[in-house]
Length: 225
Image (tube, rainbow, N blue to C red; front, top):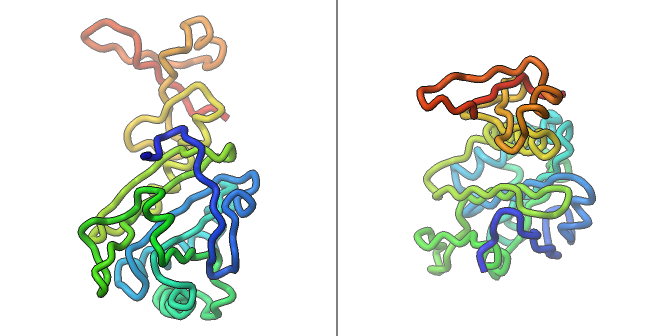
């Protein structure tokens, strides 16, 4: 069964570079980002995990109350050796024990199959399929809030992942949506489900963008606090 937005994200217990991890215990009440990569010791994956390690080290995920996990089909021993290359390339502290988030081992492809992360094109030397570049954002309620799938040839933009998290966290509690290319602090759109009377109370000073149809659905407000 495919995993749809709003579905409970499956709990799992796995081996990782930080020992045995149970997803729900690891996340506790935080948001979560689980992202997969095709294989260790590959160029694009090295850049991606290095970027995420720097973002974690700099506090970009912590200030959003987000915990991060990576995953591939390689065993833990491979991850541990590869971490040294990631740290060197990313100019990070070069101690394996200081790597700031766990990398999950899924050599039997059990999670990859369960979560729909198998790339039918990319295969290892034994002809077994590898994981694609998937991103899952999990809410504190342990439900799937967003999923992205990238091919092996295209590295991810993790600034976009942070932007999406900002939007998800804002819109989870405020009756707004974020428009195209929105960034934290930018103007928002009032939800169509908010009545005109409620909009005036909730979003004083909002404006309506006039359009040829005459319908007043483009209601714009500053970002709610």
